[in-house]
Image (cartoon, rainbow over all chains, first blue to last red; front, side, top):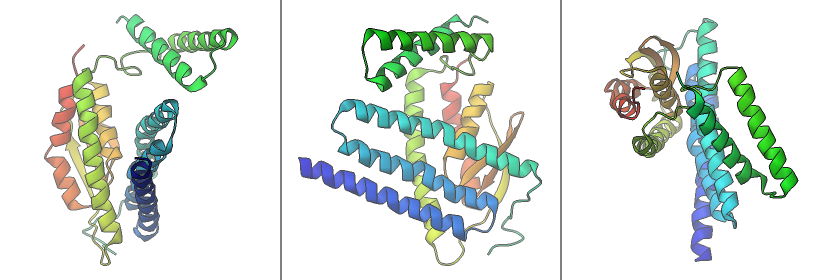
Length: 105
Length: 162
């Protein structure tokens, strides 16, 4: 039983780390601010979700699991707000998004 | 509008959060916790920020839970799609800016819709103008999927007039 939980937990942690890595690669590869924002949202959604799930499976007390679930809830509420604030600030600062019709490198 | 239920609900959720996170249950600390909960509710009322927007207790409970599960599924699908586009060797993105119509009647409903769009990787809501949300999408396919309005209909189901 313990082994099954351990394997599940490590799969979640490794998959989470994999998605963090993908997010960083996207952050470096994508051409402009707005497309990079999409790469960053991979990190803050599935990346953080999988890592916290992996940690919750390692927890021995129920209270720790509740705290980790709260953490996910707070991340899910705050990260889109922050992303929207960034996008709106960029738009307000007259940053033109690169669109597929003009340039696609 | 009567704001007492919102203040009560805020006080109860703050108290529950305090009890869960503190882990100390001596009389002194419980009294300090109660004091801080009351202070926060009092300050919130003075600032007039306790209302149906800060604490949307009017949303239907069961459809909201159902929506969260559906949104989680959408987030996972969108993550895999964006990851595939990041890793593909030749450039596989077609950034698009679209205006999406939101059918929600209330401000809270529109905020939930715009935030859900941002939370799903591949689409970010850039600004809201009345019932039109300006969305930046990583791919033309993502923009088209949003235009079908599936997420919009799901959110309209959980909002309730009050």
